[in-house]
Amino acid sequence: MNILHMKYAVEVARTGSLNRASETLFIAQPNLSRAIRELETDLGITIFDRSSKGMRLTPEGEEFMGYASRILGEISDVENLYKGEVRKKQRFSVSVPRAGYISDAFSRFSRSLGPEGAEILYKETNSDRAIRNILNSGYHLGIIRYAESFDRYFRDSLEEKDLQSELVARFHYVLMMNEQSPLAGLSEIRFSDLSPLIEIAHGDPFVPSLPVSRVRKEELPDNVSRRIFVFERASQYELLARNPETYMWVSPTPGDLMRRFGLTERECPENTRVYRDVLIYRKGYRLTKLDRRFIAELTESKKKYIDRTT
Image (cartoon, rainbow, N blue to C red; front, side, top):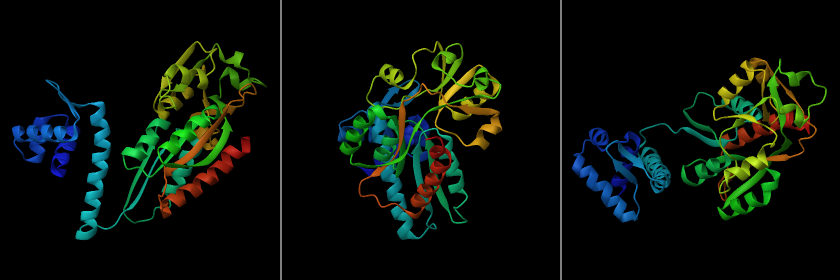
């Protein structure tokens, strides 16, 4: 496999066009097209779907791009290291579920970076993507969240992928709502109290390789007739802050974050489902100083916001 052709493919994927990629690479378009086809032939896959609208990655192409980006990044690191062209940077990467206690830990971690050069990747996503980020995209750490009923599934899946796992937190979801919500005034909240209101839910399922319908049945009560699926956490907070008829199931959240949006939390005794947040990384990977610093902050946030509710 030709590394130069791999670089060409990454640039075509970035620009979405042979014409634009040929301009940035300073190579004739026919030669670029031929190089991409030779790469596809060498690999035995189709990397791009070609149409009048441009070049779009196939599913196989998306997987290949994860490997290619990581390989080219490592080649660049080696070149820079031995050519002495850049100062060595601190590097840290983690994929996490959308959780207030984790973002609290990350914000305190970020204040400890100091004046040295740093390249930090912090990705909020679902468990499937967190696992794939480690396997294919060069991320070093991940935190995955799943209902405890899926524990056997995840243990087997992580073992099969040669990933190490360590429990971070075990908890019940609580209800987050507007301070003016009708739920906020109840002495005890039951599932039946939720039915006339609107649930805000994460838009992507947590469990890879399982039907979305099954995931939703496991993750969410069935008595809700109105539900809004949202992917961005900022949008979730805005909806909760602006519409008192909304609520959301969340892991216990720092109080200062809720006060910023005029929100509050309440427990629902009928919700007995247990969730796990689990730290994952490749077996044999040696944790860096930054990794250990983040894990220390994560442990501190877990003690403050999760342990107090369990």
